[in-house]
Image (cartoon, rainbow, N blue to C red; front, side, top):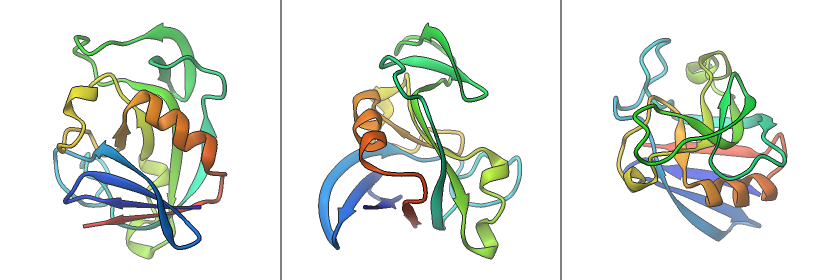
Length: 148
């Protein structure tokens, strides 16, 4: 399985044996694309899933420092929560090699109504049920490509 994120369409494609298996709506950074530390931009290029966090967490559960808190966040919550599952990315290109240290994740969100538009702070946000589905299908080490 491979993951392909297409920033212009705000979609994430799950590819199996070279063919589209499933498509999800996502949200990348509201600040655009880039790799600068502290920029809150979504990086582009080739990545791998370095770590996965969230086995057994309930949909909507909030994570802090990759640890489930037992609390849930809803759409009306003003905070930008990391929720449900985390797939932590590591860059494979020289330009995005700092991705892991920038804490760039694919994760669930409390802002599901904003999926399909750039709204994140650098991560790739997904719907909570969608991120569970993706998490259960891809292993650590799976290839990820983020395309501009």
